[in-house]
Length: 277
Image 1 (cartoon, helix red, strand yellow):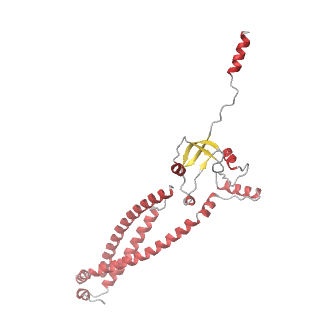
Image 2 (cartoon, helix red, strand yellow; image 1 turned 180 degrees about the vertical axis):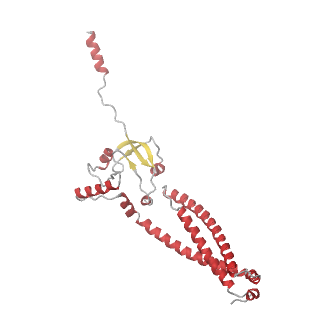
Image 3 (tube, one colour; image 1 turned 90 degrees about the horizontal axis):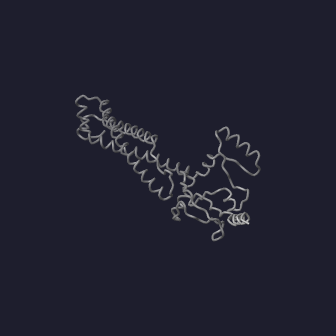
């Protein structure tokens, strides 16, 4: 009787009910977490329709958006989940809208494109950079618009710089006349005015670069907060600084040369009396 009793007690102690299924995990967008006041470890319910039955999942991570220009104006939220969970939620079964394939090099990419496009009917494979170009057409137009504004600004600044140099040199006509009467050559006067103009252009370029850098930081801080993206909306790169300094130096030298030429062509006595040729 004792062994039978022990076996019966053991059978009663064994729980044959299946263990409870643990909730699945998902990763959500940082913007969704901020707007919905969610955090890692919170439980949410995913449903295909608002208010309908769904699955309870646990937030395991927050995903930060990449610096992609094509995603700046999109206000949609993103949730990353397991593939089987996504299939059950959307009811697509074994169908997908699109998927990405990683390749080790350019030759493998070309081979994969030929194979997929040749084997799949009604399906088209593209390079990721081609898709990025197509989705960034708006930013290309904006970039060209900014380039046109930059050209107009450079031309206007050149004219403004020339006018300032003409006025500045014209104020020193008596000094120039005295130098001419002392025997200083016109070439030396032109050279000194051009050196002064070059120094003014370099100093102005440094101030402009500092102002541009501060402005870009302010612009990025504002629009990153508006769109909640790490994308840089304004950049001051070494190539831009080099171009700005080179243009400023060339324009300053040209403006100084033209302004000096205007004075040295006049007789010294006319400069002293204030008469212009």
